[in-house]
Structure formats: structure tokens, C-alpha cells
Amino acid sequence: YNPEGWDNNDHYKADIEYVRAEVTRLINESGRELIPKFLRLGFHDCVGKKCDGCIDLSDPDNRGLEEAIDGIYPTVEKFVGKYSRADIWALATIVAADNAAIEDRPEDLVFPMRFFGRVDCEGANERGVGGPKVPMPSSELTTHELFEFFASDFDLNERETVIIMGAHAVAVAQRANVGFGNIGR
Image (cartoon, rainbow, N blue to C red; front, top):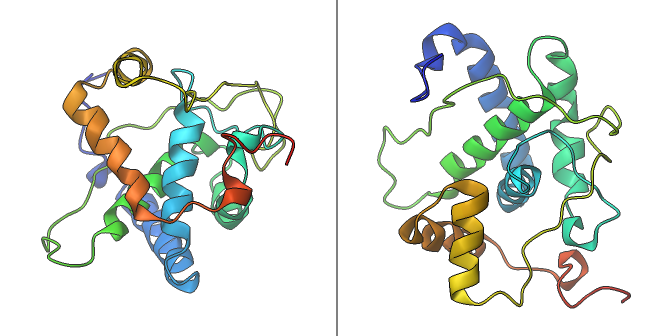
């Protein structure tokens, strides 16, 4: 085990290339609409200090993630017993980040998959719907509280937190998919 990760592109190269191609195909077929959905799926899956391949769709904060979950499901199914759903979702998130930049993109820009071995939660169906309820950060957090949340849950510093918050500029939020201030509506 190497905490810095390792070069999975050699050991898992064919599988990674397959998943990258499938996610890129889904993104292209959606007219790039799946890019922010895969980014959001990855973040929402990892809130609560672990990426476990489960999303509670009854939580209003997770509205709108069905399309990404359903889109990646055939790829998850292909690798059952070899990779966890959480690993496939993580790679889909990385591929979405790869595909987000189109102008002035460095030719060799590829975010590597650093490790495999995430464990799927219990209590979800085969698609990853269900599992434990994990509270999302409140929209009422102060800047200081937001920095504390990302430091605690993701070990991000202030600069990294600002960068990840900038990911919200990848798409336009739709009220139907935003849990904050939308409960009961």
C-alpha cells in the first residue's frame, strides 16, 4: 500500500480506458449535460468522510442525480466483483472533470485514478440508491465554517476549498435539483 497512490494506468489500463470511453460517450450523447451531474455524484457520494457508492435519493440535496446513476449503471454492472460501484463512480467523476475543460486545454491533461478499493455501503440497491443518510453541508455555513467542513471531511485547505466551490460554475443549478431552500416545494 502506498498512501501517495500508484500508477494504476499500467495495472488497470484496459479497464480504466473502457470506463473512460463509456463515461465520455455518455457525456457526449448528453450534449455534455452529464458533466456536472457526474461531478456532483462524486461529491455527494463522498460527503461523510467516505466514498461508498451510495446516494439517498429521498434526501432533497440529492435530487437530479438519478440520470448520472442510471447512466453509469451498465458500466458498474460490467465490473461487479472486480471493482466496487464506488470505484466506478469515482472514475466517472474524474472523467467528467477531464471533460469539463475544452478551451485552452493542455493536450496531456488527464486526472489519474489514484487507487481502487473503495467499499460500497450496505442498504442500497444494485444501482447505489439508498444506504445511510448523510447530511450535506448547510447553505447557511459561514465562510469559516465552510473551510472547517472541507478540512474535516475532505482534508482540503482553504485554496483547495475555493477551487472545489468553483466547480459550481460548471453548470446552471435547476431549482428542482437543489435541496437548499427547496424542502417541501
